[in-house]
Length: 237
Image (cartoon, rainbow, N blue to C red):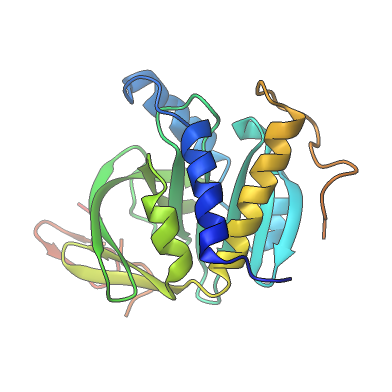
């Protein structure tokens, strides 16, 4: 597949900014709703787990791009790693208070507490750092941190970089390769455009791609207690 130029992707980012406008504040109701919906996003295995509850748009090497019926057909790009980590980036339904989310999970992060907020720092390569608040999520034993964002600036940086590092309490707890992320996110935007064309007013189709898409140093940095965190789980109380 031909890699989409950044300038072309920038046009798609501009259209996404227009399509996914903020509507109101991120209130308690939408926050709780996001926890329920995002619970369906966390995988417990490789890309095959995504296929069980998603409509697959395309696969780009290690990435799976699909549409999630539980999120109104919103599209995502997800990949897994040998160490068991899962990375997923995707859109919220139109009309949500946030444009998109990024989730990083691992079966080893057993001490992350669902709904609890964690102050973390994202860093792409050795460039800009993004201090932010993530919230914990759990589904069938899989723990993850989810970060919401409301503009396309992070997308722009995400596709240009090679690695994503996640830090907690001043320590990098995971560093993930972003190989092929530009191709994957480009396909995610194409996926979303296809969904929007098929269901312009929203909705949850059984398969929006029918006839249109190309369906083809510690294991647990999140234990310990008190102010001294162990090397295995800095999130344990």
